[in-house]
Length: 200
Image 1 (tube, rainbow, N blue to C red):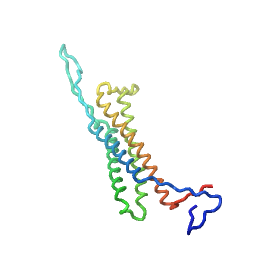
Image 2: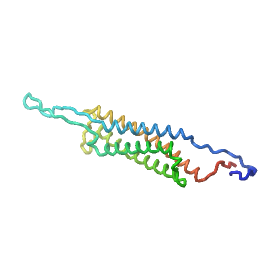
Image 3: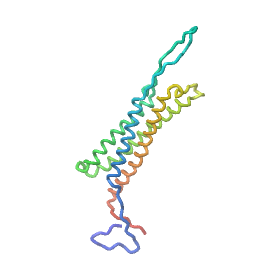
Image 4: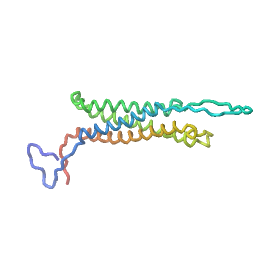
């Protein structure tokens, strides 16, 4: 309960100050999330491996064919790149808002919009990375029931780079979850306008 006009607090109540997350903490978290999702976007976007295999033998002459593994061949990996790219762009915009947005606040909507967009981008990166994980597992182990062969025994570099991108995206997802929680807490505190909490 907050004292008004220098009134004394009611007996039996202990006044506990509410601590707000420091602005630089959110800024650092956003920079780390940006680095993680941007790394995931770049690594997966440049992920490509080409190899030549012997597919048949005519007499003593081997017949060779060249195959390429690219992220564009898998819609889940394409969505992964798009999702992480959009989240990276979101964090760039939010960093700018964090630094200069206080001057552009309109009727207190800034914190609400930040919380909404943080939550939406958390869901987006979660969908992207989980879809990529499913395809990565399929590429590594195959599916004997559907008779889909694994490819990671043939395109090891492609799979290693994809795995690194997925790990980076999971780090970005974890950071976005923390950022979203902080954004929601800041929004709730701004709506309550209560500097002190009464604790029985």
